[in-house]
Length: 228
Figure 1 (cartoon, one colour):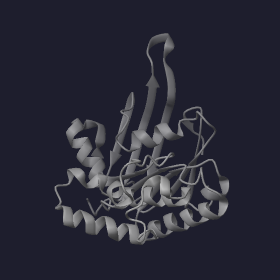
Figure 2 (tube, rainbow, N blue to C red):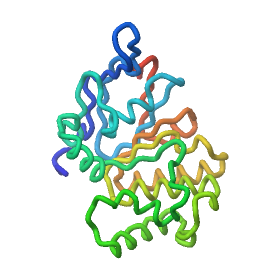
Figure 3 (cartoon, rainbow, N blue to C red):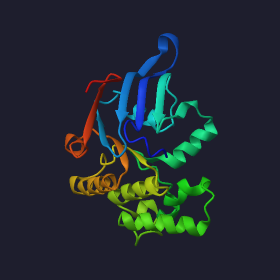
């Protein structure tokens, strides 16, 4: 990464995203301009259908915008080839999806190792890295369990471990506490804030104002536009 890029590490410029075409076109994002500094913890809030999750997928290189530019560490990610963009995601971005998206027939350890499949690292090194992050999230004793043998909070921890195993500088989290009880949600947020203190840039979609209050800044969106 470019160490000189301390400010505006992430820039979303005049971004819009339409689905469909012609009269059937619907704007999931009408226009958004967002700038995020390296090391920030940003919450994204807004009603259902406001464009929050679309913004996250665009930012993560998963969903090409209809217009506008997305720059990460001064890199225009949608100016890359699909192969280069896949490399970008592997190096720069960890994802925590709303429904965990763990593979049910893989163990905890195998799920966490999935993002390393394209890294070319030896299996022994992958095991060491995956075990280290599982210890970090408090699941060192459950590496051989299958997802359905875990609680919701434990599955969320596996999802976090998988997201950070490649040591990306950016973590994108879509409703990371949405399916959890309040005590478990507090544990997950304590983990995320600790990761942020260690330098991880986090962009988190949430409906929960108490959860958003733990971030350093909140971006509010409505009808596909940032309103504050």
